[in-house]
Image (cartoon, rainbow, N blue to C red; front, top):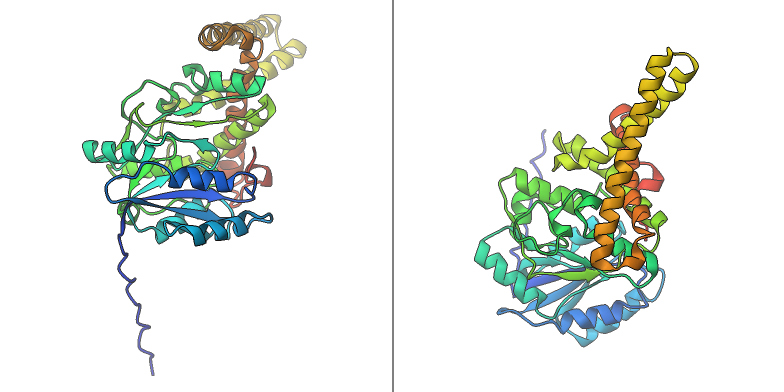
Length: 364
């Protein structure tokens, strides 16, 4: 005797009581989570008000106890548990619990102007875009942080990505953080929790493929602190490059052609070095000379462009940064290129289903 199919209950209707839900992912942030939450709750409220949801990632410090105390003090603050302890899982948990018509994803390590939420809502309604946002203004304290901040805003660092530009306004492929229509996640899906890095970029790419729109305005801006060393910057962009291959594997291509350039340049450079060494030992002298001259030409061309970009950036942000800028630009390019090539080897050649550990750990 066959059993009747199990009855699936429809989800309860979501109670919309706010115009906006602000979402923050946090783990082991006892040193500043209280100041962060207070600064968010004190922001200018749009018509309809807003709530704040912190997705707490099973912290091993006092973060959760601090949040529990703050929740008892303010009914606009709620905490949800993020068992997976990564950003996309945190965002998804908070979105499912959200009671706002719009979702503002905000960073625990970023600074925002008081009118940030109001501005986002204003542009979302004015443009009817599915996601609006603005540039991330990098600000540094240490010497290398300031150098990384300056290179962050140069088109040479990431090929002119719009969210690195302080002045761009118009359609964009992705924006920092993001201010989304809540119903968008029912249509497009949620953030891909497989992606430790780039899950927001992948979501926006998915949105674009489904005909959605993203709008950037310099009126919507925030500040964040970049990595404090070239090594940390290299590791950060190595992970970005690595996970971009997973996006390419998932969708058949990456969002922009410029994202292939660092890996193509690095692969070409390695090929020229190998050809130079091999032909110097075994090949005819003419071929060896051609390989050597081609290698020198590529290295000289990159060095010239590197110097020009460093000088123009130093002229805008301070000449004292000039010695460090070539290193920061090279860290962007080498890190991304190494990560992308490693991703090709892991995901496309070896067909790995799990990423290597060094590409999954969160770095700062």
